[in-house]
Amino acid sequence: MGKRSNPGSRLQMSDTNGLSDHMLKIYFPKPFCIFFHAKLKVEIHPPKKPKIAISDILLDGSLLSPTLSEESFEKELKRARKEFQQFTNDLDKISKRVEKLAETAPEWFADIEEIKIKQDNVEECITATQEKIIENEQRLEQLNTVQEEFNEDINKDLKRIQEQLVELLERHREARSTASMIAQNQSMTTEELDLMLEAIRDYARLIEDASSTIKHFDDVGSPIHYESLDLSPFRTYQGNYFDDH
Image 1 (cartoon, rainbow, N blue to C red):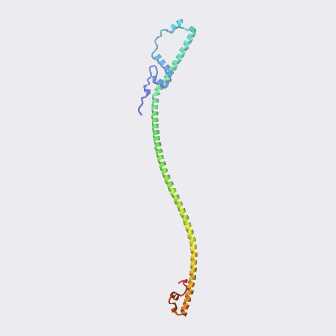
Image 2 (cartoon, rainbow, N blue to C red):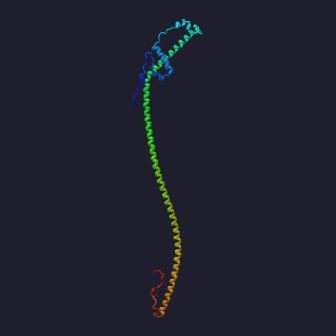
Image 3 (tube, rainbow, N blue to C red):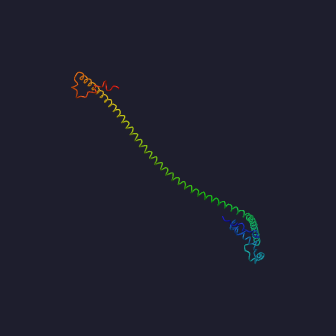
């Protein structure tokens, strides 16, 4: 901030303990300035001697109001003088007070200047704070954008995981159904195997009976009659096909 001229330095008291127009306009209303200037004019520039003196006025009855007597005029004149004297005394008191105020005015203006400097500093701090707030708002907006993108990615991943879980459940159901079918088929296969085993045993008994019969014929008859048959397994094997070896 540039240095301002101190208004108090321009305030110079006149020889009649008066103040400049600048100070009067600052500290006092317009009516007081008018009266104060009137007092200054009386003290600085005394009026010229009137052409008609008061004594002449009193002696000249033609200038007196026909409704006022000399006694009442004297009373009015005394009252006016008394009021004017009181007004003059009041102006003197006010002039002294203004003089005291003018003496402390430089300090006031210095304090005002310091206050303005502090106000400027506060305004600078407020401006810096506003800039920080704007910067933080921009960062917050960026973070919100990143968070929205992150949430969107998370939602996509969750949706994909959910789809995979549904697919796994379907596969699990298919696996259970397949396992049930396999169990049913296994039970059916077991029954079929039992039936096949029983049939094989029956067939083995038939073969054993046939082998015994053929062996009997071989013992009692000529082998020439059975040359066309290959009966060697039945001749060489001893025992049951289903016995443990």
